[in-house]
Image 1 (cartoon, helix red, strand yellow):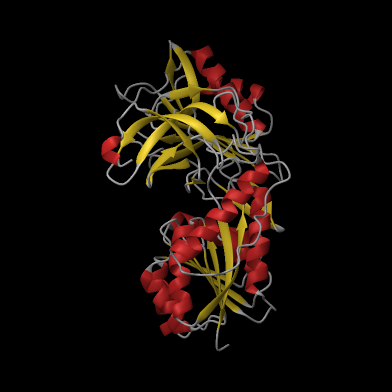
Image 2: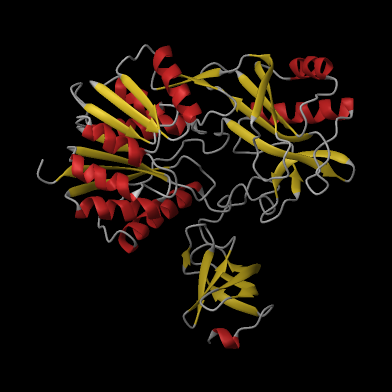
Length: 456
């Protein structure tokens, strides 16, 4: 059967053969792939065709005829509507194997790399792991709603709890909602661009139990401010910081330019591998602290430091990996394009009395070649780039600098595979790929790979 013989709204009985990187089932009808969310490998299902493209189509699950042994009942009551998680219907053991297999496929297909992919390092308790929550605020049937957006829409699903967020975040969001009701503070209406409160953001510290509450508002003028703060402090345990961020623009971007502390501290602190980090409202900080410990332990192991090395950390953020490296290296240079993150990194180096870490703002692909010209000889280069992977110029510089070892920390397997191919072609050999499950119940996966110079 070709695409021309398939029709929209047609019902089909199919067998699921594979999962895509975003967790949708794949069924093939005479070689033509159909992607069906909420289905698993091996399942037989009745599906309805919802969209047909030239090379592939999309279906909706209508009835499950034969279920996979890995299928579980999603514990979240709004899982079928919310876009936050994609894999709650797959057992946790099944999720880890799906992630390992998908990394392996990408390595072969994109990187033409036969590196061994280790079993994924997962969590003992893969729920309640997120230390940061960001929820939009709106109105449903005249009542204030706070929750996540429904899949592929901007309709808010009102929720009392989210099973992947820290419970303290849930309670704080509920407290804000109650206080808004109490003082009749208007939620933002994105269609009319009216109303006051746009988003509620929380950060919680695992090591100190401090909670930071960030209220993102459309206007700066805050109604009933003293009364609201008093009511929040009574309702939220461990409330160490209340911050207002003002975003007056009609935009999907959450944060505006202006931030002010309404009550308490500007920063809360958390600890990873014995290093303290001061976290402000806008700081980038890993959202799963338990698995961050695991990820960084693997990165440190891959770096193989003896205390004599000079290390460069490209894409260093607030210095979270840099400072862990600095405890074991002679000198660490960190570079990051976001100046506020570099200011945080310098502050964190001072906080931990690590004078052997130097941080500079700029593009890694511009700053590192300059350091190289200035005579900085790196024994180890660590890269932890955004999803788009390493800049081509940076990879060229790494190959020119010839460090003994490159440690690649990645949040996107496809760009990791692409960059590993370039590094291998340039004289490095990739060891095994170690996936770490930083985001259980979702399709995201982090990986750590050590590369050694072949002639080293």
